[in-house]
Length: 568
Image (tube, rainbow, N blue to C red; front, top):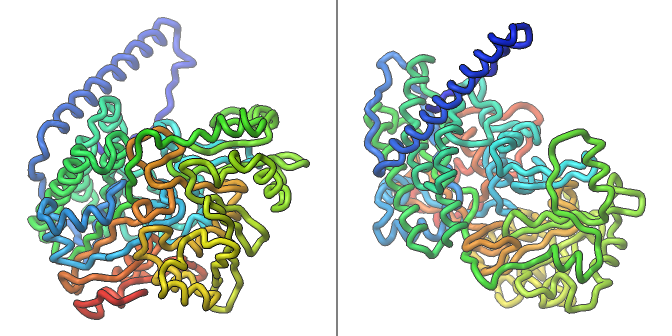
């Protein structure tokens, strides 16, 4: 079910017509059988919550000491996990992580809080400004490629679209395995499940897709028996819950049941690990890529209509990623604006400069485009728009909202870049409403980690200041980035993410395993901290010259059972 597929070559071009017809008929029959198998497998896997795995590892299979199992749950909000554990309706997560390990109280995913960007950050230890994946969709004006990963033909293109080494590559020659994930560069065993899970997606059986992840543990065990070793790192990706949130909203009964279903699948995997004697030597990690914000009517922001009808721009949002480069260039050369608004609560704008798409317009030209429309049509005054950001210079960004205008500035230091927030003429982020944070802001420049510690617990705009200037230098993002207010989205959905509110940004981040004090709490961390932390726990030194935006949390996690005030 979850094994990799291999491509072969056919000699049909040299066959007689009758033989070719027979081969085609056989091929069609094979395809029909494959589809029938996929439908039957999907039906069988989708029935019930899932029984314990009966396949065991052979005694001679090499077991890593230590190993890592990552439960990567798409769209699992950290705040709702904490509530579910406290109220008792997530018993497996509570037992294994809340009571049995360390929980990060205020864990922040990257900006933007979108799946492909966030998972790349989790698996590389760097932010989107470094790995260049700024969402599930992006436009590159130089190559005239408008990438969209949200389809079967292109969801794995991500592995060629960034070059930053992944966790799987960094631990080599140790082995690794991944179930149902798209980001698999460097993985030893890839269990994609595209045929069976594709049928489940077709019928909107999203919880069955998450069940399939746990069920595929059988295939991983069979593979390990064949290889003679259990993988040092196993990633179990659960993509279904996020789609439940988009379709029904995070406050819905469906989302609540989806979280309970995830808890059961985590319990299935942990029970199997325990029976194999792996649990006591394995670090368990429960992470999500982002949170989830409730949406719904009248929460749709129609940027395309505004740009085309009110601003008079020649705008397109059509995504061309295949075909000859010249064809794509001819198409986009017809327009002066490319809108990327399909990623939910984050949108971005690309403007063509006077010299064409290959050279971006400068800050004065961008400022003129944005401020020429009448005030009611300016982006930051639109109902539902939370924040608009664009560069004022290489080291400064302008942020605007209905509250007015403010600036963020960066400066280099020997220890790394530092940032300051200038709430003049307006306190756009509302930081001055907090007396303690007011003193921090007035003190001027601070490191990125200091901004994390000072703002991570906030509901509004946590850990935003250090991310916007680096992000706005990414060519694939464009010149302007917009974030939606809670309850709004740039697409029609009942739940979403991608914005800069606390519910967008707060992810789940929990660890348990050898030496980790049970029932402990870490104040804050970032998604980029995962890979450095796991390398440290595994005793793997990064290659010379490797740099991470994240930091290892190992010393903070192992230091004391009570790390609630630790701010790494």
